[in-house]
Image (cartoon, rainbow, N blue to C red; front, side):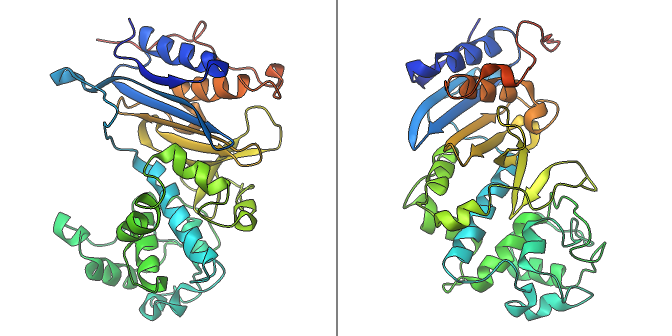
Length: 324
């Protein structure tokens, strides 16, 4: 039976609420989850349910926080886009222009675009790093400076799962006139002024409230579509892409995270969907069935998209996971 389901759903998107409840009823959601959607700047779905910690019977609340894992990389990409849009730097510029010591050990031609596109050849650290050292930007900078790329920068695309955040942070620290780290930059330039909510943040971005619409248009299509040395996602400017569920040859842009977390945007139609869960699911991106069903229910609810364009697994013909 559905547990602790609450929130808001525009009546036009009733299918989304039905799917959300059924995911809990049928065992797909076994911990907690939140799903939000914006359409043309308006919040149309904001549903939550389950537990923040089922082991202590703590229910999911309106202010529950949870890890979103690599979906946060899209937030880093937005911070970098703001820096570019304000003229602090350009994607095509060499990192060493702002960070001279970065040029050591074969990194002299690495561009900012190589960094955000996961093409820099720096997906891991060669040295052990303690928790305290993680908090020391000078230590991290030196560790990066001393590394040799695993491949010639720009020649391959390999997901920088662990190092991406630190790399972007180090660049922001150097191009920002106030020399802020990415956490402070995000808090002062985005969170305090606009939004902390993931779906709202992306709605503001695509509507031109955070960066210019001319720059947003550069994000409509991935720059890289070939196979990743780790896994296969379209990529560009720090975002990841998945095929549009209703428009052949079009893309959704955002970033998936471990366990099923995801935020994706149809920039042309100004549709944003964000799925957050603490019940870790198998797969990633649109391979995660709860996210996929909720996302598709949003697009099915908009009459301009013909429903016959895409076939998909449904809750009726998909076997629920085995639960102990």
